[in-house]
Structure formats: C-alpha cells, structure tokens
Image (cartoon, rainbow over all chains, first blue to last red; front, side, top):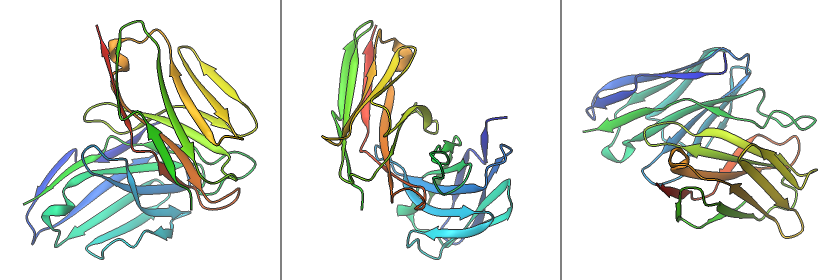
Length: 118
Length: 115
C-alpha cells in the first residue's frame, strides 16, 4: 500500500465551526506533514511530525491545531477559521523527517481536502 | 535558507514534442531534487527525483538533469501526450544532510499538451 488517504475530500465551514481533517498512511512512514496550497501556488509547509512528535511548526496560527494519535494517523483540528484560510490542505508522509544515507527525503502526498470557509 | 526558482510558468507544446522545465536553487549544499506532477483536483505526485551524486536520471519518457556547478536542474519530457498536461513543481530541501526534511517548492509550471 503506497497511498496517503485524506478525509473529507471537501469541507465547507462557517467561521464559528470546529471541524477536523484526517490523514492516514500504512507505509510505515514515521514522518507526516501538513501543507496548505492556495490556487496556482506551490504547497506551503505548515507542520511536521516525526515519530508522533511535532518537530516543525511554521508559525501557523493557533486556530490550526495538529495531532498525531499514532504513527499512521494525522489530524488537523480547525477552529474559528477565516475566509482567507480557504485552500487545499495536503497531507504527506516520508520514511523519516531526516535525510540519512541518502534516503528519507521522498514525500508522498494525499489527494487533499478542499476547504471553504464562509 | 534555500530559494528555488522555476521557469517557465506556462508551457504549451504539440503532442509528440518535447517539454523542458528548468529550476535553479541557491544552497550549494542541497543534495536532493524531486519533481512533482499535480493534476487538477489532485495532490502532487512524485514523478522523478535526482540526488547530487548523479548528473542525469531517466524513467521512460521522463528525465531529470542536474548541474551542481551552475546550481540548476531540469525536467525533460519526450513524446508528450495529452495526459502529461498538469502543473509541475520542482523542489529542493532546506537544510543539509541530516537537517529536517523541509522541501522548498518552485512556483510551478502549467504544461498544456495540445492534441
């Protein structure tokens, strides 16, 4: 299984709602990532988890709260979002979050969740 | 930190022609360069990558070349087909060797293959 899955595919929420995005992989990867992608732009890194611990937070506002319950699952909890937070949210995974002996860099992306904040 | 520039931003070719997309990077210590293909409504798909110990890598109709001296790498697609139409992103890692695996992406190239 070489797939990263994300649910839901689409999400519409109001600014006062609380919702969660879910990501799952069964490749035995120990690093998982959240990216945000606006239209016609490259993905922007938000968070990195390594061995279920948060290793990078790219100064993301606290209305985005990541969680890694186990090595296969990654969640992104959303609360009090703004319309400018509307974007495609991508999850990715890799063997590790560090390049060791030339391996570990390859990141595999899921299909994304299209989020619209009204 | 690493900076990646990508050109062109759009590229239109006739089916069967070749397409070339170029990227430059700033950190001479960077040692891994992936290319991603993103189709409309989908996540980026890793299509090929190259490490700094080789100058070229091929996979069927796709090839990547790396010039470490000039700090640029290119994606070559031969015999293009309509299904090659997508946005292509190059990337390079920020941080050297054992540093954290943060990818810096280029701005993307929209490739349109005309039948």
